[in-house]
Image (cartoon, rainbow, N blue to C red; front, side):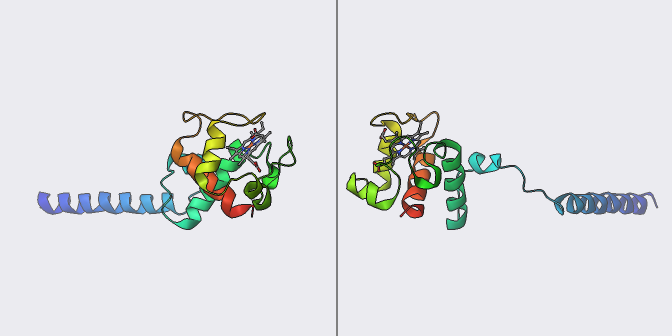
Length: 129
Ligand code: HEC
């Protein structure tokens, strides 16, 4: 008798846990953009593009809105400018982040880790052609 009650009881607890877990998950808000930088190990192509975009907005957008360049209009992030300035692969862009040529902010690896820097670089090359 006691045993049956105990089993019924624990079954009920399990069921309640299960149900409440479900109902908690249902209206899951996708509000926190911080998760993107907390989990930079983007698996799919789609996620990688979003992360690149988020990082770009965070660090680069102020001076390079829509891939332009507010401080030096001959050095936009658009393909023709990049190619003219021998910037063709992600490494070239990462190099500029680490060692800008003039008035651009310098981004050290503490601010933008290598992995994120590369994600931004790939985003730039893919997005502003
Ligand atoms: C404070 C303004 C500023 C910020 C923020 C900034 N840049 Fe720049 N960027 C510049 C300026 C000015 C130049 C041109 C001269 C130079 O290289 O310093 C430039 C040049 C570049 C170039 C070379 C473009 C060309 O056609 O030669 C790349 C690539 C670039 N920036 C990428 C980035 C990325 C990626 C970020 C974000 C991680 C970023 N920049 C953030 C101001 C900025």
